[in-house]
Length: 392
Image (cartoon, rainbow, N blue to C red; front, side):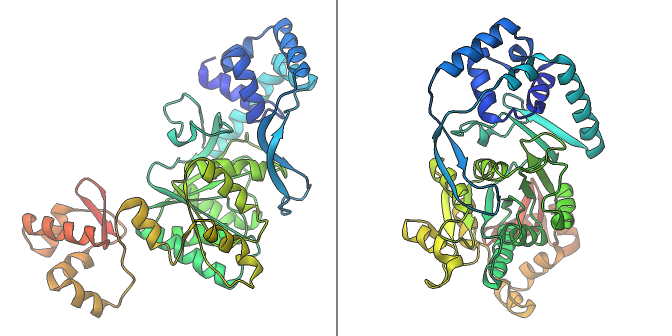
């Protein structure tokens, strides 16, 4: 087997989550060495490990209900059992798990990457709780990113602004990341998708398991423009502790975090805690002081989070570009002038080359370049690749 298959084997072992992998890697050095470990050596590790009292920072949950947000971050020892040892040693079990995973991955067009692989996201290398492997359908984020998170049972106010922020991030060419939970996560993704952005969902289940099921429409859509991402193997159902644990990946992949609505003890604040540890910027939507759904956001703002108005401020902060409010065609024509408006009107969300723009507008390349630069600096258009433009 090669490195990729050793990591795939390790990630597919039942109950083999990131902290256990971290402990094993520290002891044995690589996935290959763990695969090849002798019974004598793994038993020596097991005895040594269970003699040592060790604090490891991680999420601890005290509820069996994933919608209950009684989570804390504190130190505790990760349990390593004889069942774990036996699964590592049982190569027939490992072979069967590999075969089952590969079948699902082929069927779902699912890809796999691991720490050290050229496709593994650079942003995930320095997390306090490491991510070693990722399964994904579609692609992984590569541009500027912002996560949109918040209450599952959101208000109409939250819904409206999640859609608006998502759409404005898209207009600013910012990719949107979310957990695909009901409520704010979902509306933020819809807004971003409607605006033309790549959208990514980080799941607490396997990437082939749509959860919640009523999000199947957006789940299928972002496979085509963005990606479904999970550290859990194919077929894995979402267990309660998976959801707060996956939040570190949402935070890790994001350049900043936007909280739209959150109660005082919202699960969204777990993602915020990770983001603060990583030095990420936090944005929050203000609300009425009497509104329970805004208490978490208002407290974040009190503690130094930046205020969200409609998402355009986030675009400016992380890209340096302004995006304008939507205006009528007449007002836009008056603002841009006839020639720039003509160029703008030739563009859509499909990339257009500078040569085609020049030909269609019947304007010289030099003048087109000057106008395109002005339009781009004003946030009306985006250069998606060298010499190709779309509307902002």
